[in-house]
Each structure stands twice: as structure tokens, then as C-alpha cells.
Length: 449
Image (cartoon, rainbow, N blue to C red; front, side):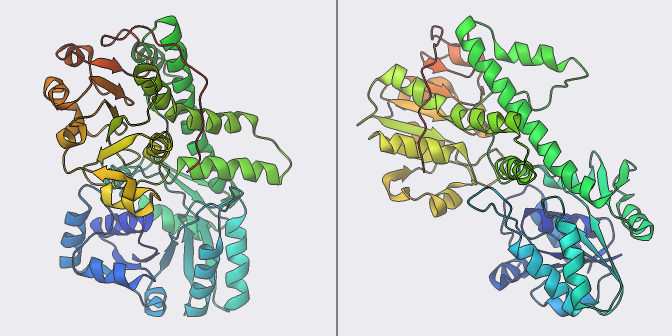
């Protein structure tokens, strides 16, 4: 099938490359000509394991191309996938300007029947707006389809080629069958529904997963007070098939481009129809507060933070990505600087992206490896669970530090690893791991960026 993907961010680029991998003729389109030039040189603008190799392979086979020219990309396609950004507005609503502009441009370039498929995360009713825009601007027939994406950064290729399910929202049986046929090489778990239900499925799915994360973090905070181990609690809960083990890893909360944006957007969607989504508001509040428990533990162990040197391991919101959007490190480093601490930081791949958006970048010392980030520090905070951090020798880390405080915000280290070194070790919800006595939480302080 001849496909065009408009937008070469995570969703558009990964989806386009993967559909070329299973034999389709794919054009990836972007208005950012600098990005297109980089892709045509074989460079990949995002960090995603395995993506560069797939791009090279399918370009060589002639199944994948990158362009900034919209009209030929639309004219030559049977299906056009909208994968443009829907960033949050100040009130939490999704900004639909880019997707509406793309719909207009598609309509003006159409030369016959097209399937217009939306993969961008959009509020309920957006595909109806797309239909209205296109129908006003073209005499050609078309169908609108909603195909929400469920990619996880760091495993996006696997998630595309081996999806849990495919959701197809449309009122056209013919379009539904064509899109289902396109996806059958990936899975037979295909669900066809109406457009608005498909739009809602994406928000509901992300909101539920965010709820699980905030729930287990609340449980972890209680575990610290009562002497239970959240790792065992989560494992015991996960054996219940009604609950399952996924997204029950306690830590410092979620970040990234999806959960924060989609939870706030769903709260706003509910508000627009006069419904207060109390549960989801609490999920967001818990998540924001959870990252600042790192600050509370630092104050408890060091006292005043002014003049203290704090090492930070991990700037990306999760491992195997260079995405720092809504990363807990943004708030935590900002809070450290606000209290007068000196900060030196390291991340395997995300440092450049972090520095590009962090307003106080000049106040942080950026290190080239984790040992140098820990050197001469009074405390070290692990904020992203990169595998490279787990494999480090803690006695070696302790040897270069000024004081021996390690805040493990992702529960990376086992008690055996911790006991190899003489560290004052804080994890999340595991009061018996390491040498620290039971931690009693203080009220959480919030900091703006």
C-alpha cells in the first residue's frame, strides 16, 4: 500500500519506517527541511534503538523516502497519516493548530479518493473537525479514520511491529477493511469502533496507566512509614490477574510527552462538558509531588542544601530515549539550584536536549561519565534507570564522593549491591534496603520551573 506520514516525530517516523519494513511504499513528510536533509543523509533526529538501521535498510530497498514536498506526497498516497504534534495549551487543552493546518493542505493537494488517518493524540471530536475542513476544500471523496498510537519511547519499534491491539475508528466499512488489512501483518487483535470512541480509548488508556503509577507511588510512601517493602507489595499485587504487574514500579513519577499531556488534556475535556475528573486530578497532583520527595530526603540527610554539591544521574524521563519533556530532572535540578546547591549532571544520551530547554543550563556542570558526575559530591541522585547505572560498582562510586549519600529514585540497586559499600542509601518505599533507618516523610514542597 502507498502511504504518506505527515510529521517525522516519534510517531510519524517510527510508524512510517515500520510500515516500510513490512513491505509498504512509504513517504515521510515534514515541513522542517533541515530534519528532512538529515534523514536523507542517514542521520536520525531522535534516539530510538534500532531505528537508524531500519531506515538505512528500507531506503536501500526503495520502500522509504523523506520529503518536504506535500503535493506529490499526497497525490501518490492511498492513505495519509496525520502524525503532527498536538502540544498542550496553557489551560491543558491540546493545540490543534498543526493538525488543522495539515488537514487543509491535504485537502488542497488531493487528486482522488484518500483515506485520512489520524495517529496524533487528539480530543474527542477532532476527526469530525478534520472531516469538515477537508470536505469544504476538496470535491474528491475521502474517509476519515482514527488510529490511536500506543508507542513507548525506547521500545517504539517493537510496539509498532508487535502491538497489543489496533484500534480503528471510522464510520466507513470500506476504509475500516483497508486499514485493517494494512495492519494484519502486525496482529489479528484489531478492534473497529466509531471515531469518537477510538479517540477516547487513547486518553483513557494513558490516564489509567498514569493512575497505576501514582497509586503505587502513594503505596511506596506509606511503605516507608510502616516498614513494608513496596517491591514485594507490587509483586504480590501483580500476581493478581485483575491487576497485573505492569506500571507498578515505584519511583519519582512519570514524565515524557504523553502521560503529562494526555492526563491534563483529559481533565480539560471533562471540564468542557461540565464534568470534574477528581480522580485524574489527584493522579496528576501525586505525580508532581512524588518527584520532590528526592528534595525532602536530601534535606533530611544533608540539612541545608546551600553550598552542597549534588550529582545527578539521568536527565531523560526514562531510559533508552533522549526525550526530556516533563522529565523529573527538570524540576529537581531547578529546585536544587533554587536552594543554592551546586549541581553536576550526566545522562548517556539526553544531555544536549536537556541543556537546550533547561533555562538554568549555565548553572549546571555537565559531565561526560557517571563517575565524574559523582566526584566530590555530598550526595548523588539517580533519576533515570539507565542500565549503565545499575552495573556500576557502588564502592567505586562512594570512593570518589565527598559524602556517602545516594538517593535512588528508581529503586535500581539491590540490598546486596548497597551493602557492598558504606552508603547512606535512600530508595523509594524500601525502608529496609541499605543502612538508613525508616524515613518519615515531610510535607512536599513544590517548585516552579
